[in-house]
Structures are given as C-alpha cells and as structure tokens.
Amino acid sequence: MNTLAMFPGQGSQYVGMGSVLLEQFPYVAKTFEEAEDASKVNIRKLCSDGPEAELRLTANTQPCILTVSVATWDVLKEETGFDPEFFAGHSLGEYSALVAGGVLSIGEAAMLVRRRGSFMQEAVPEGVGAMAAIMQTPGEELEKLCRELSEECGKCVEVANYNNPQQLVVAGHKEAVGRLVESLTAQNKRCVNLPVSAPFHSSLMAPAREQMVPLLTGAGFQKTAKKIFANLTGKVEESYTADFLIEQIDSPVRWTQTIENCAKLEMQRYVEVGPGKVLWGLARKTLPRRNSAELLATDGDELISTLKVLSSKYES
Image 1 (cartoon, one colour):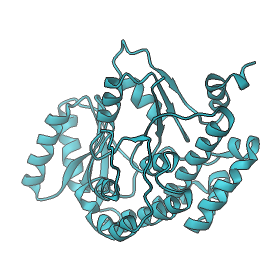
Image 2 (spheres, one colour; image 1 turned 180 degrees about the vertical axis):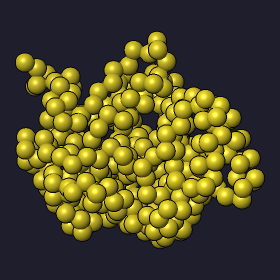
Image 3 (cartoon, helix red, strand yellow; image 1 turned 90 degrees about the vertical axis):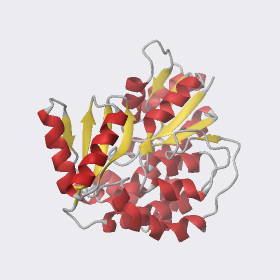
C-alpha cells in the first residue's frame, strides 16, 4: 500500500501535547532526552505544562513539535512496524520527515530547528511583519495581486503557503498584507489575519536563511532509500541536500502541490504523524472527492485507533 507519513509544522502546538506518548509508551523518553540535550530546551515541561505564551515562542515551538512528531513516529514504528516509503512535512515538519526517513538524527534536527526558530524570529522586528490566510482565490490570481500591490506601495507581500486549493497564506510587511486583505475583503473574499510573530516563508526571511547556511551545509545528511517530498518543489527529490532546507526558509511551502503529486502516485493512505490534525484536514480538502485514500491522525486519543488500523496487535 502506497503510504505517506506527513509531519505537521508550526501552529499545531498546544499545551499537553505528547502527554499520551510519555504516559503510555515510556520508551519515547529517550527521544525527548536527546532533543532536549541538543536544543537546550526543556521540551517535556513546555509540552506538558506550558505556559502557552512560552510554548508559542518560535524558538521553543519548533523543537517541541519536532520532538513530539518524532516520538509519535517512534511509537508507530515500534508498535506496528510502520514503514512507509513516502515522507513529507509542512515547513518545520520537513525536519521531522527527514529524521523519520533516516536523513537526520533527532539531536541534530532539534539543534537546527532551535536555531532556525531563533533566526526566523530575529529576522524581522516585532510588529513589522504579518501573515494572513486567503480563501477561495486561485494561486495565479493571488500571486499577481501580490506583485502589483508590492510595486504600488514599495512594501513586500507574497504568497507564503499553498495549503490547499481553497486556502493560501500571504506574508510580508504588515502594511502591505493589511492593504491586500482590505482589497480582497472588499471583493467579498474571506481573509483571516494570523496570530504569528513573523512573516514566515517570505523574502523578509532572507537574514534567517543566510544564518542557517553554515549550519545546514555542515549537517550530517545521510542517504536514504525513502522518498522525501521537498516543500520547495512539492515533488519527491531523489537526491535530497541541504539546499532544500536553506531555500525553504524564504520560499513558499508548496503543500497543495505535494498532496496533488501524491494523488498522481495513487497514494492509498495518509498518516499525520504528530500533534493536531491540520495536515489531515488539508489533505481531505485537496484530494479529489472520488479519491478513496484513508486519512489517519495520531494525536491524543486518535493514536490508539490508528495503531489498531496499522497492526493486528491492537485489534480488540
């Protein structure tokens, strides 16, 4: 069965995530310990107790989501022998996919995303950047509007995430994002300003990209037989290198294209590995209605039901 293991990005975090894993599968403590040692973040305390404001800090959020996602992967693998061929992650989740796919170690990935989060937060002063979700506006149309508005006002606004055919995200200077939202709202388009601390995946992240270059080029990327989708292209990249993670920082996340390419590969099962059900929902909205693929989540109580699907060991 063609199966995609997909790993969530920033925005899926919540206080209490990972608690079921640590309570019911104590062997995952090793994964948390390795990530904590490498990132210098008290991941278990932040995940279990928060406070929420501290967990939301980008430099904390990224190693926390990575660790919970990889620990979830460890449980699926240990309890059911889960061994898919295809891997993808949304933004930050690409690092989790690389750990699960055998390209990076959990320690190295935790260090990298901790630094990545700090650099992304520092790239743009607080209050200068913004992001907004734009509904029911075709990609080409929104790209054109962004270009025109950027030229008109001398500020940056760009498409940052292609989440599903009906939902795109823009990022850039707060003034330009605000003007775009105002214009589209006047056309009866639904827009939602996002509560984020920086304009991720826009050209304003160039300083973070430059700071990550030496860290990523010096990382120990291992060859793998697994097929990894890159956010940068939305395609399986047979020869995965650091360049995909470097360019990802200030380039859009092509998640819609990833899921559409999975459909072309006749993927029969999509398993979201980590906190929340964001990617589960995006896949459901992207796949053609006639598609009969199975969509599974692993967060909280859904973990056990997914284990039952993946292994007869859990059949009642």
